[in-house]
Length: 491
Image (cartoon, rainbow, N blue to C red; front, top):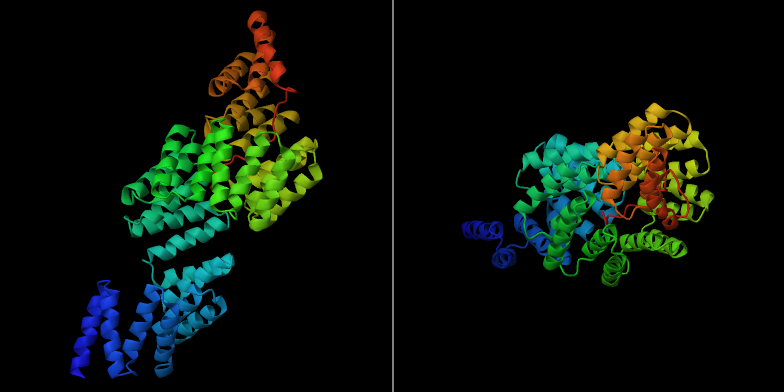
């Protein structure tokens, strides 16, 4: 018996040191001498679980439970075996048995939260994660997963706070800093996002996913060259990373390099033909090429692959809107909102459909909902401003358009929209300044050139005004506002 005790300690030492081959040999030696040694059965099951041998893990854990039915950890670990095998119903049963035996066992609550999160039962997931944290307040992984669940629900501020808590509990936890960076992107807080992601890279410089994520943030911030560097570094680290090729295509698209964007997007699809986001991105490229029917096909393919993704429905709505299929466009935007009632972009896109129908009251309602769910949504502020201007609410219109260019200083369209509103208010010099900024940001922006020409003509500057007026040949109509195509960023 004493010899077995020494052997067990030897096996535990090897196990804890990560020497699984050596540990299993000693465990099996003890098992051969004493097949009913509960601790050895449990530890063998746990070791096989850690090494990925789920069949052996299940056998030994069930043996341990047969001999000791109230073995809490064995029930919990058997649940993990079932979970890893995709048998979620049996996993839930095992975790619940562990909780019934030990109501203060935080790990089982955490594991149940993970299952419900995977099943997209987010309210149940939150309930169990919160109970895990109540029992184990310093569980940084539970805080991280609560953040992930809030993010899925579109509750970005709650998600950010959970990630911050996780990072505070474990400052060297690169995943927490990376997740915080991603959610800050979605809030439009690009400087903070880049700061968090750089901290994550410093902690884990060989992590391709983090390089990919900082590329997304840099691209959204308008720093496309740096974004390309980050994506290329991610590809060096992970050459088969289809998500990175999709995001690389995004940066090319934002740079106006549509051919390169198309090549990168097709590479992503070649690497993973079932990657819904690649078809979503392909739809955005096809929209840019004005191949709207093909874009609709691509978005529908994405929806077939991932029918629970609200972004896909919103983007399909945008393509249908450009085809003047307004009823269908509204329907798909509303389906996006049904999937995620907090999805600001879908409200913004639905607002543009109502604005196109000249239903300004409904447009305003939806733009305000977009801003409610994302106060930093620059295009929603701009669109709300243009709609208020159409209703004659000039001061509030200017206020929202100014807020838009403050939130997103690098988007030419927003400066153009502000200029158009100021021009309608006969504030011509201010309008010209806005058009100048828009043209500096996008020298080929025909609409801004045309608006500037009208403003110059109004000031009596006929020579320069008529030169600028040649840009009328580059645009079909002069419009105050364009429908916002999906700003494809690969996230």
